[in-house]
Length: 581
Ligand code: DPX
Image (spheres, rainbow, N blue to C red):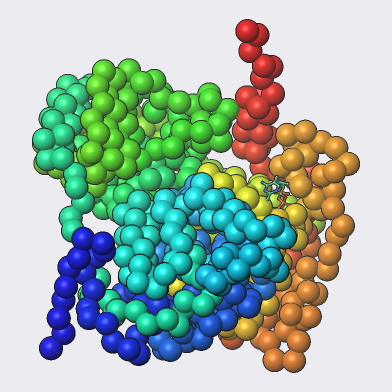
């Protein structure tokens, strides 16, 4: 029989067994929270830890080409799996991963970041160590990561490992943000108690029932008195586990439902209440006037930034908005804290009356809008952006996730209509180019069988992290990448042009045979005309055993009109002169 003991110092742990180690403890927690893949790059500060983790056969180690890619891959994996894991060596590995971990924070995705650390005997021996700045300070990595994680712990004594690991993991899962665990390299195989089942640690969220009840009552009164209510879906719906609750509320009100650009896919686009993507002047057809016309907007989990508000031109007024964030609800004249988003939306759904005014008005407007024409291009004419979008749209089905990189791919992706069941992934808050290739790799690692992944990536972004395609080949992923070769940083050219926006051209399709080497099954294709693209997509559909990259060559200035409009407004916002004091 196992004895379970609770102590003031830490959470419940089973009694110490001599064979159980710190590394085992971590691996068990990974397994218990659903991490089946851990993205990593080895190094001498984490090798023993890697050996320990190998003892758990249910958590697979996935080597990446570098730590930045591993961090993006773990972030992509967290999008589909709910949580991801990343493991690097001390300083040189961790600092390379910094951008990706910060991105996971910005995107509200729990990634457990583990780094090997210095040997605990070294500080007292006054040793200088490799992979450091050559000083006796070994804490700056931890100090740096504290700023981009919701919990940061250092295991410098094996006895503390259970409570510190559990604190980091629980906080990451609760806050939907990355956590940092540094494990001294001489402690990974040190004896450690065996963990108790994870669900023993999970107590219910400490939301305040009184605050919840009061917030729901206020919101119901406002919604039921509004003449033209509207619901707006925001990016934090996913972090709050509130996507279903939002739909429940939407159906209870029966009003028009718009989504913010970084929440695309969080409300079904074929739902009768869906009125489009609200993105100010670059909203989908017919959506902006209805949002502007509504007299009360319930914005659920929104993040209003210069990008999502098109340079502060599309921000609903506070006086006509209820803003429900992850744990706060803001009313025009009051604010309630400690109100969990999903519980709030779900409880509100039970107290609202039907009002479909905004939906009816949208439907009237839609009828008067000309149907978007979807002409096929002359098959032998040079490929255009519009034709590329038309063909990608036709290739999407209910099993597809469409992932779009920062650049004109955002606007091209935003214009696509997602069939029922299709998903959409975008990194709009952090917006770091180079994200898409490794995130695609990580996402595909966690993809359910039978689903497919399609990514749209610009040439400039691709050049940052291209080598991770090699690992898509290694793991035989059947991803389809549309590589848009428009010869440079077009979004930047449109915001502010200069010689720095033009890059060395690569033979992108040709790269795939280099990555294949002797045993890979990747396929690289080029499309310069509509027909070549149609043929390539057909080939991609039947290709098995590896990814397909279609290099789509279009003119440098062939970008979406939405990019031009959005770029102008964001550039104006960025370029405001300093305030005179
Ligand atoms: C930069 C961006 O080729 O796409 O469609 O041609 O713009 P488009 P590309 O991938 O080029 C991307 C380029 C240089 N942004 O236009 S969006 C600045 C930037 C960033 N992230 C990082 N470095 C620079 N967003 C890591």
